[in-house]
Structure formats: structure tokens, C-alpha cells
Image (cartoon, rainbow, N blue to C red; front, side):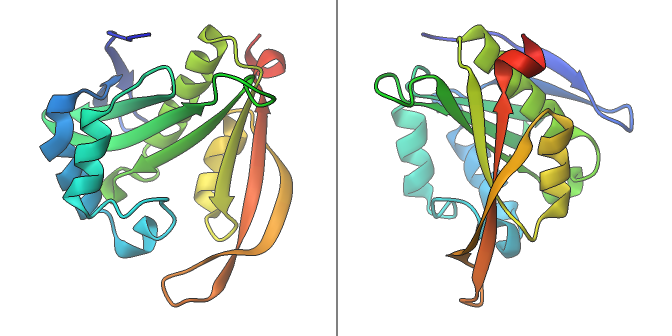
Length: 183
């Protein structure tokens, strides 16, 4: 399924961003975006996004039915990236996993909540029943964003991941019942 939409979103300070699906031509913009993230923020990402080959792989193998990547742009600059990951078959076919990354200078401006809401709307359109997010317990701002979008904390797994200094860090599992929240 190919999504060819573009939306405009308004942030708390009145500025606007364009939301649209990632396309192959976004490679260089994505490399710039991910390399600009503070090291402390990148540690919680699943891939080494500073490696241009990782981004090349993403932009050359887009499959919107498995991973839907949504970008937030101001002009030609990527300032946010949200993805909805799906498993098309099996016991998790009704669940989507949401991941959101926002440029440091766009924190606390409402972009994170805008992106999470967009992922929930997309999940509704796709017939998903639940959304899942894993967040570092040490990121209360991110947790608050997901909570505002209808996610609730279901579990804390102590020491699941390692921070930049090799210390174990706790992860909170958050779930949104899409049908209840947005149905």
C-alpha cells in the first residue's frame, strides 16, 4: 500500500511543518537529520543512524505495508521522523510499534505529540487495534508525549538497555488501545 498524502501541522509556537511519507529521495536529508541528533538521544535508537549505509538501506527498501516512515519537514529540513512498524501475519498482526525521533531544537514545541497522533490515526485507518512503544524511563518528556496521545504505561523492564556509559537503563512499555482511544 502506497501512501501519497501530505499534511500541514501547526506547532505550539505557531510554526508549521509538513508531514509526508519518506521517499527514496530523502536519503541525504535523513543522513543530515540523524547525524545532527545529540549522542545522548541516538543511544536509544535501534540502529546506528550515523552510518549512511543504514539510511541508504531504509530509503532503497521502502515497504509501506511493513514500516510506514513519516517525516516532518520545515522547508527542505527533516525535523522529525516517526515510524509505524507492522507484522502482517501471526499473533501480532493487530499490533503496531511506534517510534518517534524529533530534532533537539524542536523538543517541547508540540512536534512529538503531532507525530504520535498521526501514527495513531494511521493505525486506525489500517485497522490496527493496539500500538506499542518502548521508551527509556529516563525520558519523562517522551513518556508524557505518548501519555497525552492515549498511551498508558504497562510495564517497566529494569536494566533492559545500556546508556552511553555502559550503564543499564530501564525501559517503560506503553500501549495505546486504538479502538478505545480513537474508535
